[in-house]
Length: 215
Image (cartoon, rainbow, N blue to C red; front, top):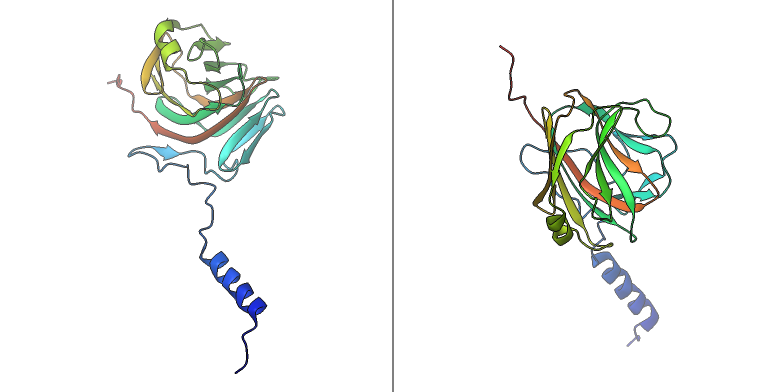
C-alpha cells in the first residue's frame, strides 16, 4: 500500500480550513438606517462628500477618520429641516471638532456662514456656535453633560434635530442642548477639522417637513 504524502495532506487541510474561515467585514459596525432615515456615508469612501480647504479626512476600516488638521468635510446636498444621527469617538483626550449645519460653501477655512454643534472632549460638547449669523439663544444642562459624556476611545451618539428656528442636541440619547433664534435657510452639513483625531460612522438623516406652512 502506498503511504499518503503527509505534507500534501496537511497543505490541503490548511487550504480547506482557510476557505471555510469567515471573511472579516470591515463595515460590520455600519447600521441599517432607521425607518425614514437615509444613510449619507457608505462606509467605504467619501462619495457624496467634499473635502474643503485641505481638510485631513479619509475612510479607514468603515469609518471617517479625521486626522487633526483644519478645513472641513461638506455634504453634497443642502438641508434645512432634519434630524441627523451619527456615532463618533474621540481618539485622544481633548480632541476637538464640530458638526456644521445650514452652512455656506464659501469660506477661507471654515464655511463663512454656519451653525455648529461643538464636538469636543470637553464639557462644552453640544454647545451651539455660529459664524456669519446671529447667535441663537441656548439652554444647556452642564451637570447632565458631565454625566453623559463618555471617555475618549468610547463610541458615542448624536441626534441633532433642526426644525425652523430651533435646534435640539441629544448626546447618548439624552437631551443636553436646546437653542432657538436660528436663521431658517438651507445649507450644508459638515464635519470640522480643528486639531483633533476622531472617527465617525453611521451618519444618517431624515428630512423634516416645515410645521408652519404658509397658506
